[in-house]
Figure 1: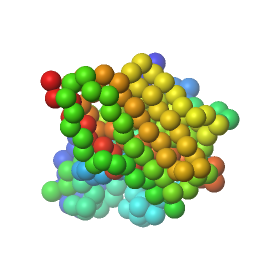
Figure 2 (figure 1 turned 30 degrees about the vertical axis):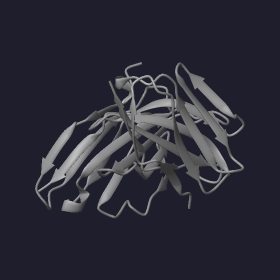
Figure 3 (figure 1 turned 180 degrees about the vertical axis):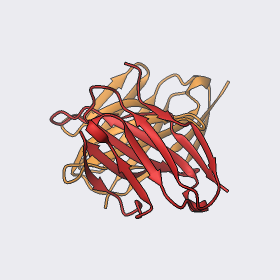
Figure 4 (figure 1 turned 180 degrees about the horizontal axis):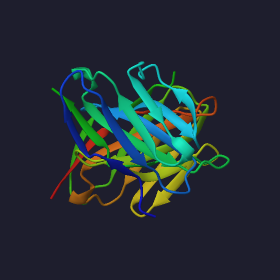
Length: 115
Length: 112
């Protein structure tokens, strides 16, 4: 069990550019979440996948954001036309959901800075 | 919408002291409550998960309790150590949905 991994760990980009982040969950986990965290705040839910299906999206996920999880394995989060307000830590988590039990395990995050 | 509050926002204690962190939530129809630790600039580390049918969970020097009727959870840390210094976050999910709602965390400093 290598845990949840995320790449890149840091990304600096100019306003208006597109960026893509990758998350590799724990291999047997069936659920994958994306969160955004700004300084001094708790993580805010963006979206989640049950296997390859994207089942819920937050209102925070504007039309500039898109997430995919092809074949129910790794996931990507793309932000188009980045804005300075997108600067944050983007966290990925995975879990193996069983009746009554849903424990999330987080990756190290990708810190995005938009100049 | 579920609101999660953590008090205090910051706490500083001398090494060896026992301490309690508090988490409150507005919707009692929770599915799970999970406590995490976060070191500066890092991801979250899972500490304890309490299922809705449970009252408490223990791991080493940590004990978490859950009272759904009052909308509260506590994380008890025994014999605190400087290595316990971090931000502690609680998160809940609901039977009616699948997203987790996080509090803003308690920043703990244990002074040697």
